[in-house]
Length: 232
Image 1 (cartoon, helix red, strand yellow):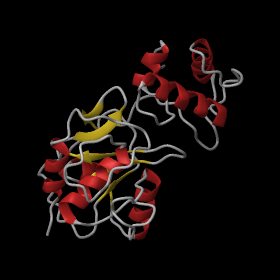
Image 2 (cartoon, rainbow, N blue to C red):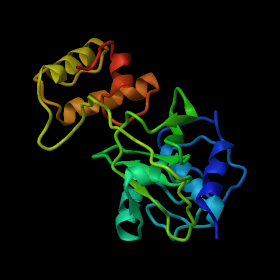
Image 3 (cartoon, rainbow, N blue to C red):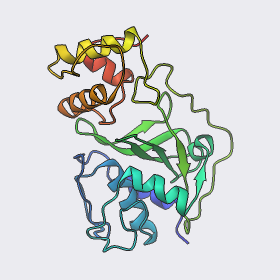
């Protein structure tokens, strides 16, 4: 049986390769070297390690053209299993950690020590990073793969401040500042009403794509810094 450690080991070999949002990786091409997006990267590593197609629009499709997406990873975790806590995934090499949309999500591979390997952004490509100070919704273990958690707990505190699209929407002066900064940068959210609605989300996402940042439509420390502001 394939293991989570094999997934992680495969991922490490691709550090420095290019990220392109929406890029399609042929899952059955062992010598593929990018470009990647986050879900294609994780699904490719899983398939190469195990022959299991997971997190795709159709998991029975031809692996050469199967389309992976964070939303399909969330669907498969609910339908096929196996969801685990973020803390458990943080100490399990090869486990996936997922941040769900609503429209754009992100997925990474755990190193078992609170770190990640991930196809991150146009600026950074495939990198080693950390789970700390980032929002995660769940950990995922792919059925048919053997995972072995490392001993000891790993703390994964979420970001202290994060602005994103929620229901009901986030409101306040800080959201208004985000909107004003977006407009100054040429990404007009169609008003500075202090409400983080769909138009603000779209403007943030457009800004992130233009600046080569991780495109998730959320304003955390990195996006705030690029906007020229400090979150409070």
